[in-house]
Length: 344
Ligand code: KG4
Ligand code: ZN
Image (cartoon, rainbow, N blue to C red; front, side):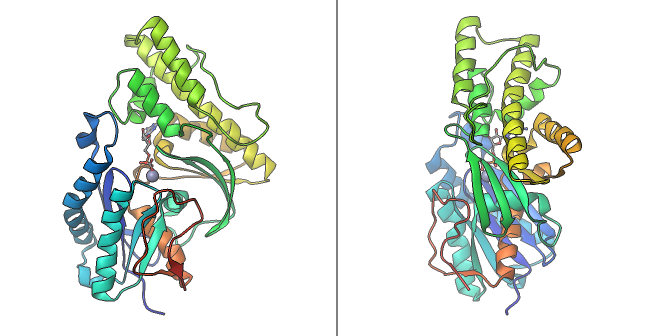
């Protein structure tokens, strides 16, 4: 079998242009994330066309910098990986075609990566392979999924949001409160010093009998409250943010605990952009102590979108002899578990 490391990984599914270099042990040798937040903030959200153009402009420089940090040149790279979905199609195509070009020019293996699989394994970056089985909670701007993970590619989707993702609940709430995009981090900061019990906000689907979640009722409740009382200020804003954050964290923890109990899982993985949230992390840490879980939380820099997690997921599959065909396409709605164009 040909060598697959050092591996270069590229992530361009949304509004971060990222590249990373990993070694065979799953360690990150060089890692660069260039965010486009400043470009999109004025529009209050990600503008897909603008995002693709920014990726085109950034990608060469981002890859060069990641290689530089790893102390390597392009000629040292033994395999290349890129996110093929889910994400914005124009954005995905930028990273994927860059990787395809390199694979073709250098005759090295290519691996198309599922972005969700990247998030799922992110807490294990730095160790050779993930510990299985585990209950994975992926919480990001586009996803809220509870997954039973038995091994690489062996997943059961146990529950998911029926409407808004957890990150959207943070971002839409923040927008109603007049905070900049993306709002999750602003809510996190403002919630410190706030009273999480100050405002009674709904936790959707807590008695649904399944493991699904819903955050649209929370958004409506926030809107109604602001319509009635206006946008809070001072201590009121801290209290509002703490209460909104608590409603999201509480709903996530309750469904995750239920899933772990139902499926007899004692290993829990918390990952995705929202897993950077301080309160979510501390609530899961407390639950782990109480319920005897072994908890794996992604490092903050590997919670939000990055290429190290894409490289790490790619390594797991490359090791099994998997390769993607050079004409693999981007798949905006790629479901968890699916890896496009892969063969051995
Ligand atoms: O994983 P990610 O970078 O992109 C997607 O794949 O969606 O997640 C971005 C999401 C945004 O909704 C953002 O507001 C949220 O993660 N986020 C946070 C925090 N940091 C990022 N939400 C709550 N608290 C944070 N500290
Ligand atoms: Zn993501």
